[in-house]
Every structure is written in C-alpha cells, then in structure tokens.
Length: 81
Image (cartoon, rainbow, N blue to C red):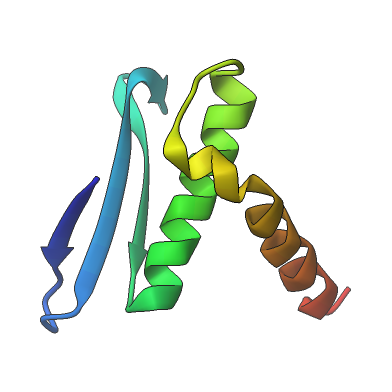
C-alpha cells in the first residue's frame, strides 16, 4: 500500500498486487482518493481481490471480510436500478 497526495493535496490510496496483472502488463491495483472512505474503499477492494484471486492466503485484512461484504451490499442497495 502506498499513500500519495493528489493535485489538491488530498490523500490518494494505492494498493497493488505483486502477482497479478491487468490490462496487458500493468500490475493489478486499486486507487481511491479521499479520507477514511477512500481508505476503506481501497482496503475493501483489496480484500475482495485476495479472496477471489489468492484463495487460501492469510492476510490481516481478511478478518474484516464480512464488514467489506456488508458495505458492498449496502452500496448496491443504494444504487438506483
């Protein structure tokens, strides 16, 4: 995980996978801007990536998988169909 500042001096959270590639040769990654919500969104996406692409891996963030799934479920319920 890497935390940078964007052009507006706001936090930018970046998480990359050292194993997976996306869109050709670029490493799989997630980028989310913002305060706590951006951090949580980035961590949730990373957690889902681990579960889907690296089953059986042991990572501390997996302890929060149920909460990440709940946030995703709530977000989908709020999105107009």
